[in-house]
Image (tube, rainbow over the protein chains, first blue to last red):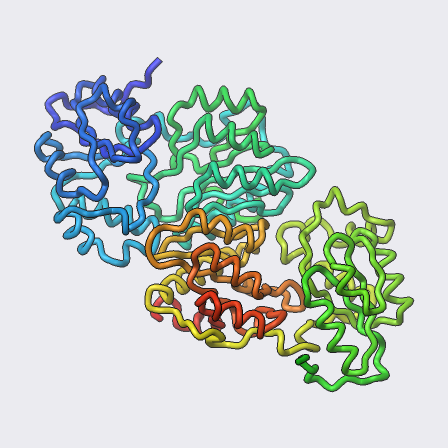
Length: 293
Length: 293
């Protein structure tokens, strides 16, 4: 079963340009858009995208630093709308080896963009729009990839897990306000681990080694306040569930409508097999009720 | 050379009770107080304190959970003033095995104390004061262990390191406001690692594996806003410097007057040998100038 796009698609539209990082989402998006009758053209970001999953679609493989080549390829393919999707490990500046256009864009993006992860992405999107492209969100074409509010799993958080979720939300929000990671693990009121650039899997592995006896903890993954939602929304999947289970956790809480799920059926199956809960948080409610909830 | 206490000491005072965790500070405090003519009595917390360094002082080894035995021992020794000093890895509640008095005190401390690290310490201090003891800060007896404002090292931060320090301060403050860790590592504007309960050494080791090419990052260790300063101030020492150097960092920034240094000469020697800077931050100034600095 494949999810069909729910937005009307104009078959005469220009090809949708997809700047593709890693993971299954770029191919899912390309598939859905093409099934709806719109052509796609993918830039497979070298070292990030998985070329095998993109082989079925018109694409070219380019380095992130080759900004001029990327813009040229998108224009030659006739793209006017772009989506940025898939995981991209932030490159060290020194390894970017920008081409002449890349250097010019980097100079325009400027130093401020390197003050935080979000600053960089917002600057990349602003730059693409300055270059005449319209940057769209993946969820505009694949609304089913947004995590819904409420429970997806059979298991549900008990009172202790609910308290851990509340504490995790407070920590993740404080981190997000400083434009840092989006995740943390809390067990029995104790913050076992906080995510920076090591990634959620590495944080979960660490949390597993730091876990205390007693009921397991929870993973909280949130979007940053004011985060650019056209790229870099947190993603959860079956692999996240398995890593959380291996770390002894009892569940995962995430922002409803602001978290991507590549394959919902696989996610739910993995959670139910492991007995973990999956809870989509309504962040507006959290903001309103705060610690009184 | 031994640091002499700078406060007048009444030789007829009751013995100073020292609840001793790990590291060299408990013995340093005991030595300074006894040299000033005041007797000491130590509780070496089992599994935390190093009994060898405390052998020269009247002491008894007791589990943290044995609260009744600890209070009895302190009273029998005639202690009325207490200092909590040394590193204590927070015990899992399940391994505490409280004695009857410990159970009663735990019930009084209550659930709120487990909402954060600071909550627990504040509750322990409140409980000790309820039991009739006066809890003093180690720095009341050893003012020289407080880190001074400004540079201690020959090396100084350049513009890039200064920007990394500013970002680290913002992140550490956000974390502290959520009563979580006190440390982070920043390199070139990128937050490489954030400390939760794994400890600074483990965070530094991780940051070393996540470091990017280019100039090395900085370690920022801060006190939490509103933190109980009678216990649990961050500590830096020669070991911290060596771990930071091994992680490829260029320096350490910490809160002046709110960070403990067990052996200043050894700290400075380690920093100068490794070429790292040691910078004591005036947090009031940071608060005033914010990101404009």
